[in-house]
Image 1 (cartoon, rainbow, N blue to C red):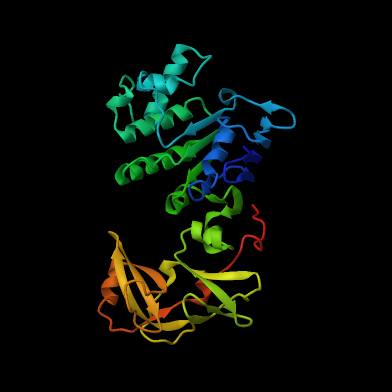
Image 2 (cartoon, helix red, strand yellow; image 1 turned 60 degrees about the vertical axis):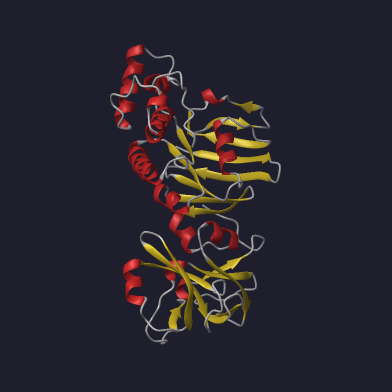
Length: 364
């Protein structure tokens, strides 16, 4: 199984220019809104036509601008699942699932529909209409319809974004179980890092129509390489830097000097550290430990976000340098500690980042 994409498509604000390959692992397309994620999927599916380039799926040419090849969607063996289900309201659940099946006996089609209903845990729902289903059930029908014709590749375009948090979690678990038995390739579009991380083994990061990183998800998370990739992978603490020689730098936005494990190069423009990597030792015995004060806090059901000022007490809520995230049990230990706290930026957790122009080309 292999998909090879090398296309360009003129967009109103930029030119989409992506080149990548997919073999067995689920590939997540990550990027901000308007970065070209969905357009890439639509070109693969045949819903949109690139300006130029090639798309090859399992040695079958789906699109080749030079050779004048552009297979219609129905002949591409591509399954697509959008965020807005797109079920046919006048067809039953069974008829929706069977829509892409043709050239088979009624018994064979009925067998495939029954199998798909079992896979998505909707046995007994075949005679219902979409309006009689919940949002989560409709999305499961859409998944069954996409998989029924046994596509060689499954394209998932933010399939959970229209669902509430509980349904989103349930559908994600359903999808993971389904993908575990799906023999084809999968591309998963999301702007949610944690969602993409749970579903996918590899990530491709898009920014303004260009591939800015591609590789194993943990490698991209640990070594984003550029400011854009760090931002798109959820790094909340970023500062411009000034090299001070060798393995040290001045973080201009945090007003502190930091030691690093890697040499600071002329191509490095920013330093970052992820919010969950900040720690709070009781004594300043380690490098990169500074006195800190809390400007304000916010909470989720499980975590507390701490907005920290280094070096001196904050004068207002906006006067902070860094954001830390701690679980609530850790917060219970910390919250009564007198100020200033000690804030540690582990040299091993610092991200040295370059601009897009100086960043190395992404590789598989």
